Length: 536
Image (cartoon, rainbow, N blue to C red; front, top):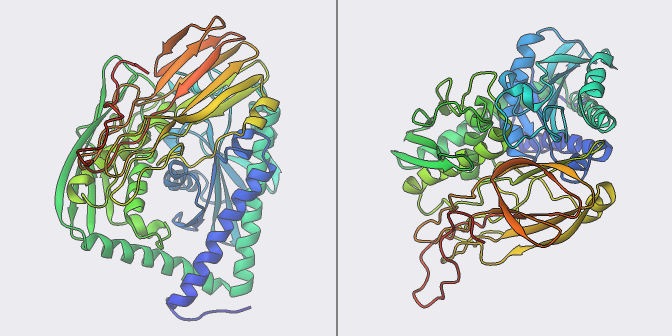
């Protein structure tokens, strides 16, 4: 055993230890994906893993999904408050958005780890389950008004005790979800991933010593705080405001921010944002914080790994009862996946005034959520689109943007697992905004239904286009269509739940990214500004 006795670790040792610890949640994620039952976790990689210290402070996270990771500290805090005296072999489960969760399909499992009887930290993973009950298959209704309509609600609950999984919790999933075998398989995979993480953390302490682990925790958090303070100190002081809108309802829903940068601190104020909404676009406060932290990380040098110290210089104001800090039992299923994207958009829009040579044009600004259910199966997927052009690069095409970091479900998996046939997956030509550095292209995906199914769509940017920057043109709006068996097409709303018959084709055309920079005058104008009203 080696033990480093200095108060703070030297830079070389700290860097080595940082990468050793970062490897643990990465390995946890790989294990979770290999052992999960659902294509959503196995193929789309819709999961995230992280490590926290005994005080609930983030110390290491894998490069997984931003909206999961930024909200995780709230889940750990809630679990610690309800279970201050956990034992070895315990694991806590939670998905309640008002107790540290994000939306109900995202289930978090938290496992403490100990050294010689002393609590040293927590291994945590969060995974999106393809169904957790509720009024529609996939637990992502086009419209819902209360949290209960969206599925099972689990406050922090002891899921595993002395390495034994609670039969009561498993029975609830068996009784209330549409594909219980898949749900139980994914839950067991989450428990197993945490057990692997615990073994690796204990292995680190066994090899390098408890003192070294404690020094690493304090050193990496202090280092993160210093680097962010230094970064902010070198940015110009100022105040910036911006507003953007959610569409998909009768009236646009404003999200407004005032961003104030002074010295080594950053304050983000959402006071002028809309009040809590009667639909499901409300974003829990944990999701709002997650979006703010993500934008900060985008600005930081890439060698700064996210941890608790990185966020000490940031304060956030989101009034209780607002769209970005709702009160229960408000529905939130779309807040996690769609509103979080718009929070990122409006923050980057405001930063264009303070950092015009750094901030890109707007990306597609939506996850294009599609949930499909049959009697015994549920399928969930988000679809990529265009990234905004930036001062140095054209925007990437057909990618997941900002708050999501998932893959697509391979066609082979879709067609062998579900009664679907994929007729087309292609770049959506002309959807990116033109400019010196054009926006990336969206995609067109056409799915033929071989059996009748219930379909829910939650999407954005069907009315308000992704904005260009520095003179670049806007990207094109997205469009949802349904083609009947006789070839007739009709436009579907941005948010909808409906029955789709066998032989019908669902067509999702995702938005392109905005362009950055004015074009040379002689370039041809191949893209008109994005549509309002759903023209193709």
